[in-house]
Image (cartoon, rainbow, N blue to C red; front, side, top):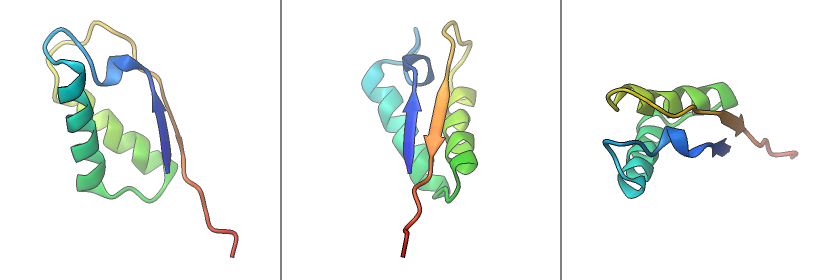
Length: 68
């Protein structure tokens, strides 16, 4: 799958960029999403872990399928 997102998902006043990336990676691995919606749901779970958001967030997920 492919997840595109704005920095508001992983960075804020209470968490730096590297911590946000690690949190996002752990959330994706923990859920093992199969569909694009599940990828977004797992990514949105990261939002609940950070207190008070001051930045907007935009997500775009794509799940690629084998053509075989």
